[in-house]
Image (cartoon, rainbow, N blue to C red):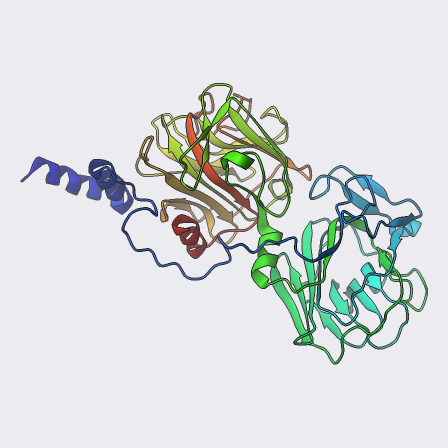
Length: 479
């Protein structure tokens, strides 16, 4: 038998289908990426679309140490001195203490007789009142379809989301637990007379109403709806509010899901190398890097050695226990060594909690890992990946309590640990994510050789606060 054929058969038996595909790609001088002739058909997902848009924004309050609306139209006035906290979902957040009757007020925003979307990050720390806790209101009168109220409502079994015009209302199904960040979206489409509530990007409620909002006066209030309760003030919000946005258009379900779960996306193109194209405008910096003129898509970033790295900050999802996540990136390694993705509480790569999530083992195989509270759980790719130009390799790590830890390479699930159903994170403090370097920090190590540094290219780096499905991975790979 031909020696080459014999070698290929042995590779198939020893390393599996993925190993053979990689071996064939290397021998043929082609890559098994989306540039190959392999026809991939992915079912529809919300990925790789231009869903996220800042069009038609009426007001946006980032709450980063100020009550100013980013459009400079609806700056808010505080009542009873609500304060700012540093550990918001995105940078700072506004803290409300219901016992101190804290709220905000601004002028009338034209939401009557129109479609609109209102979305916000919320961290309720408690529900001290027996019924309602207000998020936002525009309620000049307690009359049918003249009182917009977005609230938490307890109907006897626990607090859930409630979207009301007064007598035209939509109630969420999920009982909301305190001390967790949630992304909430309220949508009204005047063309279909429909209200929707989304929780973390997932539809909670859909309701057809008899009328649109009818008022043309009144003040917008945040943290209180003054006319809602029989006893005025029995509905103050308790907790943190971050990045509250009002738009006079209907956001699609896909845009809402991306807003809720796409933590960052860095395409690393030459004109905006360090710019986040996700919904959160995550801040980033890098050192000792260059720009590859030809990446997987347009340009890419190249890491050059010991002191080379990219770092972004403010990733709250890695501070939440059992929060699903996905990490996606394209790589073009010059050597199979070092850390690819490192997460830490400190910008030094260290801190009281730090771990390299993706990187190379001492033997050059790719490793993905998490910490389950007792030990590091690592999964290892069965074969090595191609080196250097022209090869680009797509890597996706996912985790959820349903499916455990998974590692995809070039659209193939190459390793998994279904029993890894617990993920123990750092704390409430947002985290730093570093590419190509762990700074040799004293951290949990696992199977990754963190003393070495990655050298090579990286393109289209993304983090999601949900588990990407196989169809999602396929879409990113082909896209």
